Amino acid sequence: MKLASLRVRNLLEQFQRIDTDKPVVEVGSGAHGIIFFFGAKHSVGVDPLAVSYARLFPDWQGRVPTVAAFGEALPFADQTFGVVICDNVVDHAESPSGIVAELVRILTPGGLLYFTVNVHHTIYAVAARAHSAWNSLGISYEIGPFADHTTHLTSLRAKRLLANLPLRVLSESSNIAGAKAQARRLPTRHVGDRLKRLFFKNALYEVIARRET
Image (cartoon, rainbow, N blue to C red; front, top):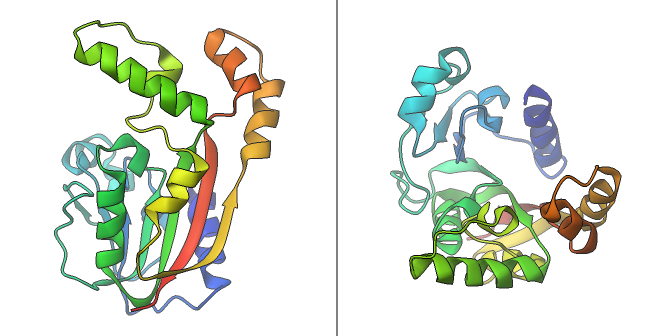
């Protein structure tokens, strides 16, 4: 994760120098997030399980203050942070769009957003909705490939999360080809692995954006 933190910082600084006087936040910092080795003077991690993580991983978590909160209702004033990081979080929440709106709300004009999320072939989104429907009817039967994310986002839906917000996208990429290649290289252990060879899963959609107003 140290290398991941350095990579993200270097990516952001390709677009503008990070102002050391402006605070940095990672929403969904988890147990070992990017923020802990990002190297900012003023930084904070946010996660619903922050209290538990601080107890379980004191050495790591002690590097940066953390706050227990949900991404849909961040406990910060508008335009507080010069850099906002959200690394592969929103598809594990009930309201991805609500979290993204909060990320932008707390970002200062001219500040940078680093945002990633896993995207999947459309088949997973369709099947996951059916999976949720039969669970809601009391049919308790789990199929791993369709139950491992709260929301299965396609590339198009991920892009739409950032639409109609005061953001200018500076960099955008998706490693769909890499996800397909990895699925073909790995041994086939179950039906989920066979599906991944036909329909890509867990490709990383990565965006760097600047808040304009």
